[in-house]
Length: 283
Ligand code: HEC
Image (cartoon, rainbow, N blue to C red):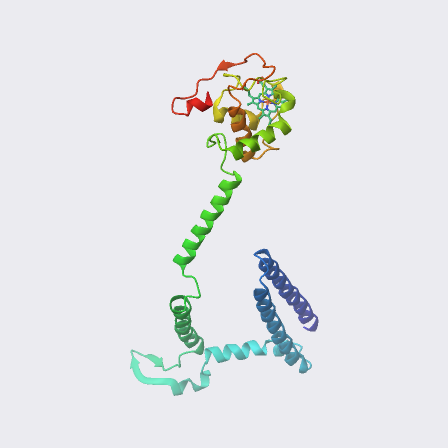
C-alpha cells in the first residue's frame, strides 16, 4: 500500500504541476494577467497543503496494511453526507401507519441533498447580485454582443490588411497615396521587364489599349497575382500582399494614355471597359 501511495502522490503532484503550468500559459497567452496567475497558484498551493495534511494524518498511524486509514477520510465524508441510520436503529424511525404491509421509515433528509438544495439557492442569489445588480459579470446576451463587436473590429482589421481583397472584390484606387505606393512597387519589381514608363521591354506595353490578358482592375490584378509563368511573367502573390497588388495594378492603369519613350507595339486585343465603369479614367 505504501508504494502505491507513493506512486499516487507522484502522479498527483505531476497533475497539479501540469494544471498550474497550463493555467499559466493560458493566462500569459491572453496577455500578462498576474492576478489570475496568483489566484490559480494560491488554489493549487492550498489543495496541495490539504493533500499533504491528509497524507500526514494517514501515515501517522502505523501498520495500515489494508489502506483503511487512507480511505477513512473519504468514508467519514460519505457517512456525514448520507447521514444513514444504522439498521439496528431502524425500529425508531418506523412510522405507525402500514399499507398492505408496506411500512414507511421517517428518514432524515440526507445532508448532500440539503447542500444541493440550499447551495442552488445561495448560488442563485450570488448570480443575481453579480450579474444583474452589480453588473460585474457579463450575461449571455452582453457576452454575445461583445463577441459580435470584437468580430466586427477584427473584420475591419482584416479588411485593412487586405485579407478579403482578391480578383473578385478588388476596386481601382485613384488616390495619390495609393498610386505613389504603386509606383514604388512598380519601380522596385517591374521595370526590368516593363520599363520605368511602362513602355515594355520583355513584358508588353502597359500604357496602350491592348491587353493580352484583359484590361481593367480585375484582369490586371489577376495577371499580377497569378502571373503567366510560361511567358516569363512571374506570379507575385507570394511577394506582394493583396493590398500591394491592388496598388500596383491601379498604378499600371494610371499609366494608360501616357507616352513612353520607346513604346512596344500593341499586343493582345483592344480592351473596352464595361460602360458602368469610370471609362474616362480606365480607358
Ligand atoms: C521577368 C520579367 C517580368 C517582370 C519582373 C514583370 N513582368 Fe509583367 N509581364 C512579363 C511578360 C513577359 C508578360 C507577358 C505575358 C504573356 O505574354 O502572356 C507580362 C505581362 C504583364 C501584364 C499583362 C499585360 C497584358 O497585356 O495583359 C501585367 C498587367 C503585368 N505584366 C504587370 C506586371 C507588374 C505589375 C509587375 C511587377 C510587380 C511585373 N509585371 C513584373 C514579364 C515581367
